[in-house]
Length: 254
Image (cartoon, rainbow, N blue to C red; front, side, top):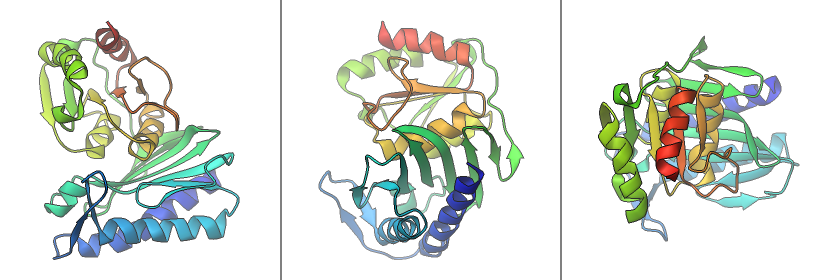
């Protein structure tokens, strides 16, 4: 795992070198088939990371947001999102991040969240306590939902049925904040946010986050309480306090 961790850091360094110089500069924005935006920074960063993986670990698989899946049934597979929060990147907001995860037999065992502009990096994995820029981090206790700060990127990501369930949690919580994509999960791992609830995510959106949060003392599962894998349905709940996670899970599955 330590060798994989060192390599994950080198991937993040390479992506940062590509992304950071393009931030707040003029560049073209294209639309993908699902109408979501993509930029030259997304494509070049993922392409570079894929080249590095295929050179270092040719037997490993790759699952990337921009260039799809390669050898995905391999025991080890690297899951890449070069820019999680592309809209924020386009808008000049430093709340996006590069997500890098290593999964073993479909289960995340290593996660890295990198914010290239602020030079912030969160890392966690199996047998590796989560850190922020090299310092140990812990999620914070929050035994009651009425004391919790919860976050979601956008209520538009929920179906109408899911939105009604989320409203129950929102109504009972102390505060709610919107936006921030992966950055909200990073702050949860660091102990500044208590809960993040989302739907419609892909493996490249959540695999790295799960590894960081769980190894910081929190819990991150699907809406049925099952561990997240490459085959999860994209509905996630992350909480810094495991008791609070159970409470909210019951509200979402009621």
